[in-house]
Structure formats: structure tokens, C-alpha cells
Image (tube, rainbow over all chains, first blue to last red; front, side, top):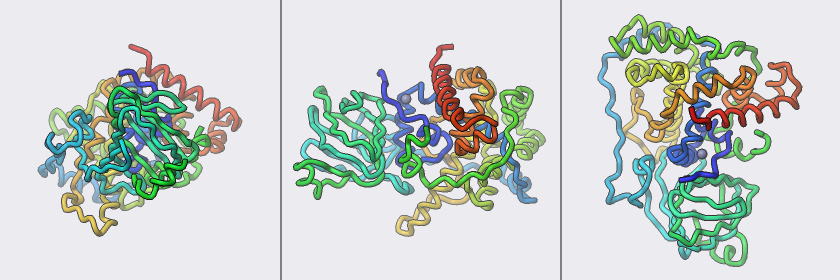
Length: 215
Length: 218
Ligand SMILES: [Zn+2]
């Protein structure tokens, strides 16, 4: 897999320092599992954050803090709750491990050749995440965003003005872009998407169907 | 660079970052202090090997107040910061065996623990705020990491550490100030005593160099 589109540096730094909203965090994490270069970059940001920790101004702990922690040292640890969905309930059998751990909502068709399935993230505050399938060769509706759209390709490909996006590639869209992706002809395209704000559809068809499209 | 991505800070983040007040510090980087780095790693090793409580106390006394300080600086309230700092050190005790001493990054490792706990705390608060979605699983002692956190320790830590060592001191400082501490460029200019115009170009150069160094095979 050759990855040629990566998240902006700021986004990876925000990921590494834990500043991203849950849905955005998830989609960046999916890219990192596929991309060694960005994983190293995130690791470098963690090292620099360690430097910031070393240099940070200490603030006194409560007087009983150490004793309180000592008292807990020998208590049994809570069991990890990493329930992985059973394969039969997964929306796609080839999902990366990190997505296999997610819970999914109901799959639904949003337009001809386009279906989506929400990822249930109970604490996402502003963004929402979903899987998006589009049919081979489909020309997506021209759209722009009032917020941001973070996309990581899992299968297939799409292309727009900025190039071709295959498995592992990451597309960062913000309010400035107004693009019209075309799905590659080889197979259906599966992406994981995090979106904030609303999608704005353009063109006659977009205006006609936008009341029915709710991503 | 930051100015080029206004949307990023506006809506990608979980909450708006709190303005950082100016303060003068960070005269040293940990990379200049190999002795200290080895020492912390050693202490963690002693905790892992034989549950050494004296070693643990030293780790606690050094790191807990710094975790608390760093969290408060980025906008966490005092109470929550105290709790996360305690739980961070508790996790250091429990996970000591998972620490890789060759990574040379005891502070980075502890940072990632604190970061994950802070994310968990924020998510828990968000769930609790949504009265319609009670989540019985969570309680205060739950320090289980969120699943998507588990992969962030990169498998090639030594490569990362080597790359950072080759970054010049001023380059790593400028990257840290801008990307980790999120100080405004004007403040970075003031702290480093360089013209504002130089800050931007230095950050860009440093980031490019870091990317290059990280891509070099070892
Ligand atoms: Zn990448």
C-alpha cells in the first residue's frame, strides 16, 4: 500500500496531545494504523510532549495524594473492556482492528450508489463518524462543508482536484473546499469519515435530493 | 502555518484551547539530560521488576506535580488535574512492565498515560452530561484506556528518539512550543528573542527536517 495523502501536521500533533474530538480522533487513528511515517511523526510529538511535561511548572499535590495512591496499589485492576464485535455483526469483514472494536448504528442508503453506517461514539461532542460506501464509478455530488470532513480510505479509491485517494490515504476537507469526488471504477469505495458541521450540496440534483440526504 | 488552517482550531478539536499565559521556562530539553532519562527508566524498571515502592515514591514526587501542572496549564480544573495525576502514577505502577527502557522516553510514556486518562475523563464527563445516555460501565477508578489509544506507542521508538536527537535544540524547542504547547507565534518570538517573521520559517524548516529524519531508514 502506497500512501500519498496524509493528515496535516497540526492534526497529528492534536491527536498525539489528545486534543481531538472523538470522531476526528478515530479517523486519524485509522490512518495511523496504516501509515508508519505518520505513526513515527505522532511518536515524535509524544516525545516532545514528554519534554513539555519535564519542563512544566510543578503544582503541589494534595497532602494525602501519595498515601491515597499507595492504598490502591494492591487493589485488583479493573478488567479491560475491549469487546470486539463478532464478525457476523460487522459491517465489513475487512475492517481494520481499531474499527472492529467500534459499535455501529443502522446501515442506510442515502442516495443511489451511496450508503452509510454510523459509528456510535457516545462522547463525540461536535463531530460524527460513519462508514461510507460508494459504488464504482459513482460521481459524488459536488459539495462543500460548513465544518470539516476527515476521510480515510479503507477500500477502493476516489479522485478529486487534489489527486487520487486509495487505501490508507487521508483527505482533509474544510470549509474552503468545494469538490466533486469520483469513485474509482475498480471496486466499491469504502471510507471512514468524521464530519463536523453540515454538508452543502450543489447543483440541480443536489438541490433536489438534499432534503433526503442526511449524513 | 496555524493561520493557514483556521478551521482546524475552530471545529476539529474537542473544545477550544485555553489561551496560554506567557511564562518563561523550558531552558532545557530532556535530550540534554541523558542521565536523568536513564534514571527515570531505571526507576520504572525497579517498579516493574520487584514492586519497589521507594522507586515509585521518587517517580511520584517528580512526575505527579508536573502532570498536574501541565494539565492545569492546558485548561483542566484543579480537582480533575489532581485526580488524573494520581491515576497516572497508579497506572505507571500497574503498567511498569510495559515500558520499554530503550525508548529513552520515560516522560513521553508518562505523558501518554496522562493524556489517555484526560481523554477518558473528558469522554466520561461528556457522557454524564448527556442524561439520556447513562453509562453504567464507568466509575472513578476505571483507568482502562480507550481502545483506539492502544496503538499510539510506535513500534519504532528508537528511530523516533534518534531523529529527535538530530534535530537541533532550537528546532525541537520551536516545534514543541508551537505544536505541543500551542503558544502564539508572537510569544515564541518573544521567548526565543527572534523576529516574528523568523518563527514561521523556523517552524516550517524544523517540521520538514523532522519528517525527513523520521523517514530515513536506520
Ligand atoms: Zn500518513
